[in-house]
Image 1 (cartoon, rainbow, N blue to C red):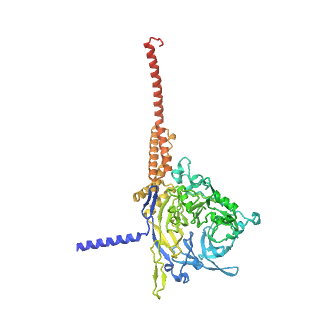
Image 2 (image 1 turned 90 degrees about the vertical axis):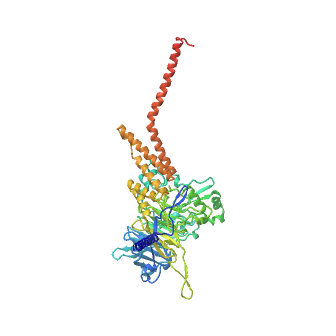
Image 3 (image 1 turned 120 degrees about the vertical axis):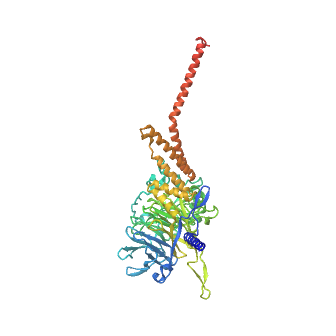
Length: 627
């Protein structure tokens, strides 16, 4: 009996363990990147739930399953998830449980006439005004709806029709032909990564900051690019004419709206940047154009060759694939269609040219920090094959500036700190299985025909109100997948958030837990190093009047700088290692300098006295006679 009982208990334990493992198993592997290579790390996020038409119920979707959805957004005020059901020309509003349909927006009345969408795409919620903006792409307009808190329904407000941006490319166009209303650009609030202490070592080294200043402008070579002798940087942010008016058609794909009700629109095949519209939907200017690099000979050909002039569009800036706006008013934009040469140069130099992710301030300048081992542009691929690199299609930003970007090419999500350091990776592409149906052998595609946690065509990403759960919208799979952080992911986020909130003791404890789970985490080594550097900088030895205390503080300060240098070395941060080691070296020299000076004085005086003694001795020996 005892043996049977023991066997039964062992079997139960094994089954429990197997179920636990399968519940947390994921069809992908988190990894980190160091100077010496790529190393696996514990999973940071695992799939939690899959929501599709079957889960929601066709009876709740007016009998029509979701088809090729293109975008989603979060209504933070109540947790609603809105889906742009593009294939069915409607917008679906789900409750925060993502299973209950609150509303389906497909028709409305405008000027007494029923109106509808034509391939709706991008969605944006203006939280303060509680307005929904929908990019009605093939109708060449943006439609706005107001939210009624009592009924919890959206109602039609107005349309922002085609601003006819083609005229701004016409060679006959004069700026005085139309009135362009300029709205003063609001200055975004200072974010944690703009404050001195928020950046760790690079923010505390005697004002030596990198990447962006308090005005949100790029400040050093980290985000700049120096063209070669035969190269010219082209910046189309001024909206100069670079394509013929016949080639430019306004087709809004994505939109964000700032506090002044200015709309920033991603328009299909518009290479001049985002289309900025005022609160009345009138064109203001092009905003945040990407920078490109071209040869001098190509520029001369475009200027003097009629044939090349007709093909200008081949050498234009790259269009954005998606945009989002953080709580501080910064616009984040992803760019997917990048040239292979620009990408390879970007991963080598971390320059702005070739960057797949940008952070735009009020002036339209890219102020994204790129201090990690590789820049925040997804996977670095084969320099001979563009398809091995990431194609970023969307971005979402947490309250503390953690940025998660979605790679449509590989189905991966890359999360970075506000300084551009890789935090973790999760997600993968799945394969849809075609099964033979019972009805005369006709084939049908099953939505459940691929692994939970993978996506067929990931198209949008959203962080929920808990600031932890991530949702991915799969266009081809027509479903949502939620991902939850593991213990490792929660500890990573706790370390970052504690650092940003200046709870440094909690941050060190969290980073040490990370190192206990993954000894390859270069980010954890750098995190502890930054805090050691910060702690060392707090000691002001010169202000201490008691000699013993002054010496004790100097010793502790030396220890902390040396500790910081050691952690930075393990974290492959050469620049931060140099700063910490130089501080340590200066303190060592400062401590021994008085003794060194006394030693020099004693040696000098001793040498002088010895010379005098030899002269005196010689004088005595010769009886005062000169020889």
